[in-house]
Image 1 (cartoon, rainbow, N blue to C red):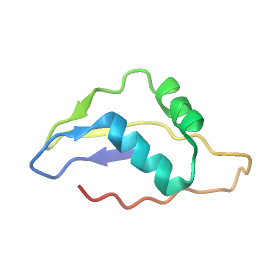
Image 2 (cartoon, rainbow, N blue to C red):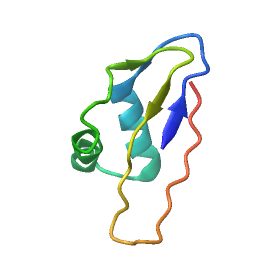
Image 3 (cartoon, rainbow, N blue to C red):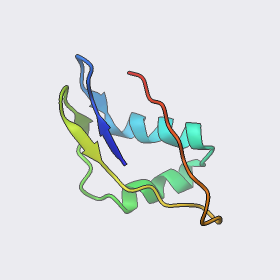
Image 4 (tube, one colour):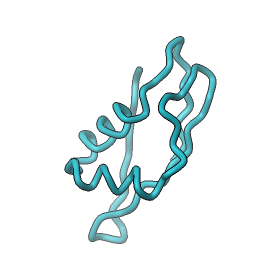
Length: 71
């Protein structure tokens, strides 16, 4: 997944991962998996920068995750 910060302020990456987990219904231990599989995540995403990270499917191969994130 690629997210681009088009706002005027930096985005805290940990807060962003929490919001993604909240939208997808994932629990905090599963959020740790996002960070574990993406060890190079920066602490913040500056305005105009993009953040690329991997989200792993749950038990169902055909399960998709659709997100709308506003900051």
